[in-house]
Structures are given as C-alpha cells and as structure tokens.
Length: 251
Image (tube, rainbow, N blue to C red):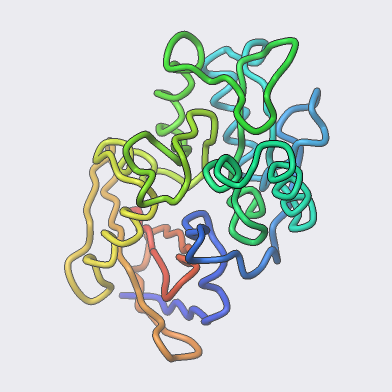
C-alpha cells in the first residue's frame, strides 16, 4: 500500500535543506515563522523549529549563561546594511570573506545563527567561539539535534566563505550527523544526495530502532511531480533551492 505525495516546483525554495550561497540566492521567505532564540535576546530571531531546537541544545549543554546569540534572522535590507558597513569599515577583501551579499546570506532563511562566548564586548561579524570548553561542547552536541557548523576549515573554496567557527545552520537530523561524520560541507552533501534517487537506491541510516531513508527527487522542467510513499511511515520534505527535493523517510 502507498500514499500519493504531490510536490510543486515553487516548493523547491523552502525547507531545512535549502542551499543558499553565492551561486544559489534565496528566492522566497514565505511561510517562515520567526520567534526569539532566547527571552533575554528578543530581537534575535530564528525559524520556529530551529529556535526551539537550539534552546534544547543550550539546556542540554547547560550553556545558557556562557554562550549568547549574536545574529539570527536578517532581512534583505539588514543584510545590505551590514554588507555596506563592512565594506566601509573593513574593506572589500574582509567583507567578501565574512559577509554574504544580500539574498545570498543564510541569515535571511531564518535557519542560521551566529553564537559567541559571553563577554563584555562581542565582535558582531566574528564573535569568539573557540574549539575548547563550553563552545566546543556545544559544537559536538549540536549535530545530534540537527545543527551543523556551516563553514568549517578546509572548505572555503567550496562554500565561498571563510572559516566561521561561530556560524551554525539548522539542517535537521539525521542530515546533521551525516554531514559531520563524513566531514562534508552542505554544498557537498546536497550534491552527494543526488546519487540516491526516488526510483533508485536510497541512502539508508540506522538510528536506534529507526531505519531512515534519504533520497532526491528532481523536478526538472515539470510544474509538479507525484511520488508514491509507503503507508504508515513519516516523512519530511525539503527543497534544495535549485532543482528538486530531498525526502527523508522514517520507517
């Protein structure tokens, strides 16, 4: 037995796995509900599920009084302001390394957060988030919940952004674990998933009692695609912001 899932082309621009970078701009903000990441920092917002999960990580690591949110969701206008101010204050080379152009910033998705070690003075563009102590404990715990360090060292030529130890992105579980375990950038993961197609071999992951299957469904030139999904299974769908969908099936 199966159930029918219909996906429309305009939906490829939404979901936890959309790839936003210099090559793939953000297309739409629709249906993104934003909430504060922390009651003490009510002006720093994230997409609802990402904000809720971030709060769980902070409680698990017990770092609420040591790690603070620095920058979450940004509008296009805010990103443009930050970009221009960085150009004026720090120059083009620095800005191109650390600040994305408007509509090419993950911060506009509501799925990205910059975190910093709590200090009297915190650098907004490059907050301190070292590979030791409570910050590294957070970094190691985050993938269990769905967050990854988005711009790791050694991936600069792929991501187009300098190493940013402070920038975390919500992609959802188990994608976060796979990305970290295989030492991939999000760009590499999105490309790698295309090997696992709807009507071919799926990427299979065993987590406890669950068998998870991940596969890619291209939409190509069609306005919509229809997939047959097994009954009595839960599944999650995300566009990749380019040419199709990534489906995560939980058996």
